[in-house]
Image (cartoon, rainbow, N blue to C red; front, side):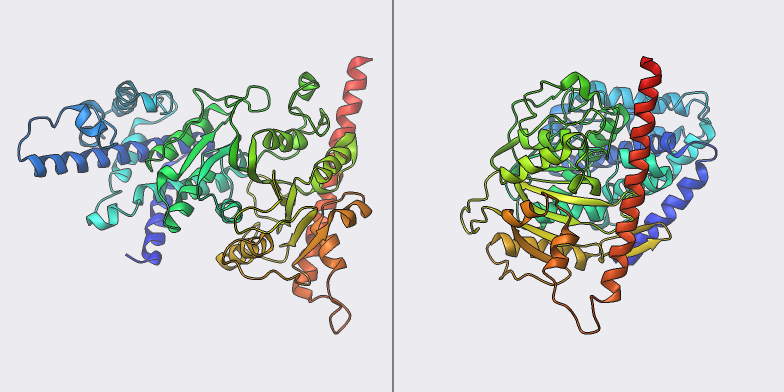
Length: 514
C-alpha cells in the first residue's frame, strides 16, 4: 500500500472515531480511543507470537506459558484481556466493565505496564453502546497482509491520533504533543546515534519515538541509545508509556509522574543528548521555593517565569560532551527582565550556546507565541571529526521556511528540515556534512565578542541581517522579509500580553498583601 492509501486509511479511521465521540470532550475521549488501540496492538503481537510458537513446535503445550512470550519481548495477555473475547461481547451492556477488567489483568501480569493503562470505560458518562462501536472500529486495525501489519500500522495510527487530538484540544493539546516537524528538527540537528537521551518534560514521548526512528534510518540498533524521561501530568505520563510500549521501546520514565523542577526523578543522570519542549513562560512554577537550588549556577531564575529554570535544568543534566536541543518562546532570546538577561549572558560567556534557530510562526497547537530552538553544547573544543568552535555561535533564521497546513497552522517540510540540520552539521564540522558558508538571509556564524556588543541578545534575525548582502532592488526578497516582519509583530504582541499578565499579577499580590 502506498503512502497515499495509508493516509486515506488513517483519515477515514479518524473521521469514524470522531463521529463516535458524540459529546465527549477531546481531552477525555483521547484516552478512550488510544487505550483501545493499545489493547488491540498488544493482542495482535501476542496472537502473532502464539501462532509462531504453534508453527515451530507443532503442539499446543506451552502456549499458555507467560515465559514463552516474555522471552521474545512480547507482553503476556491473559484470557480475559484477549481481543477476541472483547469483540465477542462488544454489544453487551457490560462491555465497559470488560474493557476495564482487561486493562487491569494486563497490568497485573506485566509489571512494565502497571499504572499506565486507562481503566474507566465503565463510568456512567461513557455510553456502553459507544464503547462497543469503538471496539468494533479498532478491531479493523491490523487486518490484511502480514507485510502491512509489520509496518507499525498501529503505532502510526496511535501517532496520527495523538496529533489529531492535539489539534482538537488547541491550547491544552500542547501539554502532551509537540508537532512532528519540530520534533524531527531537534532530532536531526542533535543526531543521537549513541548514548543517553533525556527529556525531562516528555509529554507523550514523541522525542523518544523520533530518536528511535532516526537510529533505524541510519543503520543503528535500539540498544544504541538509552531513553530517560519525566512528565508531571499523570494522564500524559500514561500516554507516553503506552506510546513507547506499543513500539517495543525500552525506557525509564520514573516510577510515577512528577514535576522535574521540583522533584527530579533522575538526579544523577548525565545525558549525552537532551531533547525537550518545556511549557513556555510558566509564571506559577513555584520558583520562590527553589531560590537556593544548586542547579542555578548561571543565576537564579525569576519566580514569574520558568524559562531559564528549564534551561539550567538541562545544563545540569548534560554529560561532559553532552548536547541539548530544546524549544523556548522567542522572549528567551532577548528578555532582560528579572535577571533573565544576566543568566543568558552567563550562559554565553560560559560558551554553552552552540546554535540558535528562529522558527516560523504558527507551528504549535498550544500557542501562537513565536518560538525558537536553542542548542547548547557542554564542550565545543572539537572532538573526532568535528572542528573546534570555541567562542562561536551559529545563528539560523528559519522564519521564512515552512508551509501552511491550514488557516492557523504551518509545518516545516522535509526540505526545510534537511536545510536547517545540514547547515548546523556543516558549521559544526560533522563528517561528510560539507563546507559551511554564511548565507545571506539564512545563517551566519558570529563571535562571542559581537554578541556581547549587541547586549547578549540571541535573536538570529539581528545577526543574519547584519551579515546579509544587499540585494539589487534595495533589500531582501519579499518571500523572506514578509514572514520575518509578521513573526516579529507576533513576538511583540505576545510579549505585550506577557508583560500585561506580569503587571496584573504584581498588582494582585500588592492588593493581597495590603
